Length: 62
Image 1 (spheres, rainbow, N blue to C red):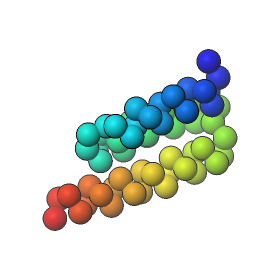
Image 2: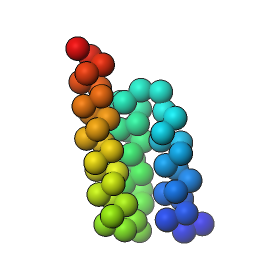
Image 3: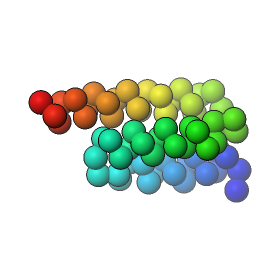
Image 4: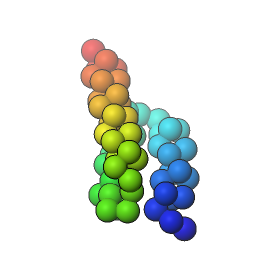
């Protein structure tokens, strides 16, 4: 399975993680494991999603 195929498959798993912290952890792990094989666009998308999850986490704590 290529890195892109793996990324597409794992995106769905990320979406169903129950808390923002779990989603953040999962996305960071994905970048760490496959960052050298993912496109810049895919890494940028993950970065945006991490920031969104961090905002959700902050709102959840308030």
